[in-house]
Amino acid sequence: MPVLKRSLEIDAPAGEVWRVLTNPELVREWASAYLDGISIRTSWREGEKVTWKAPNGATRACGKVAAFKPGRLLRLDYPDDPRGAFSDIFEIAANDRTTRLEFTTGPLGEADLAALEGQVDEAIREIKSLAEESAQIRGVR
Image (cartoon, rainbow, N blue to C red; front, side, top):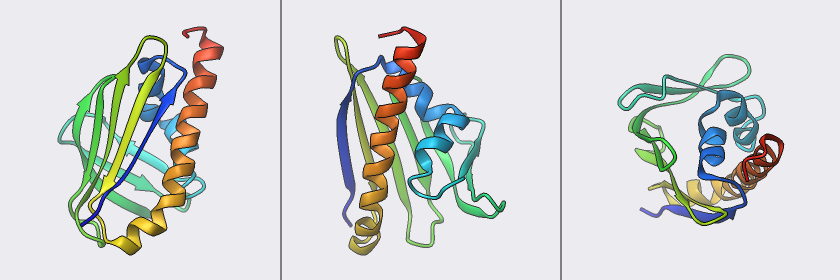
């Protein structure tokens, strides 16, 4: 089954990108591309549960933190998803003045990936915007 991959350069240090990916308030901002008001609940420890909650409290997705390597790798696995088991993988690589973010989701069926494509693109753009804005405000460029 296919996967969806996106990569982009972010004009912010890897630490700021990591903060955007793991700070619950910032996650809520970029994850609104999938569902407005969605929130994440997790301890961010490998092997621990991750739960996405809708604004009404309903569980939207459950999985586990499969990899948590600060500033480098975040992998969330969803083994019991109704669409089939899949993963969201965020890989971070620091360059001289920028950070490269590689995002992969899947494997999922063609129709599921097609339905997610616009949401993924919006979420990735928001991650970039939040990290760059945060780096500028915090003076860490």
